[in-house]
Length: 126
Image (cartoon, rainbow, N blue to C red):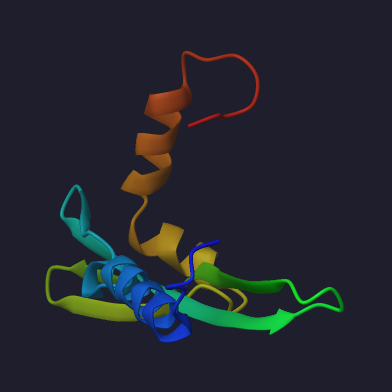
């Protein structure tokens, strides 16, 4: 490993990469229009990162440095904003009954899904 190993440089690089990954588009998804209805997904993002490094001399007098870094992230849908004419409603994904409410408000979703997968046999694979 090079002697110019820099913990702060690694931390800065991690934050830059993470900042580029987590943009407003990631938190508020791309709108989807189905018939007269627009759906806008909202996404929860949580992450953690860590880095460490150090150097030392062993019993034989050999010097060395080492370091490591890592990140972890979780991305999960949290809600859908449904805009249908004058009606606007935010439906939390985790709340019981929200999927049924979404299907009730946008029956075209079921029709579109059935049309997309109608000719296929077996389970839906996207």
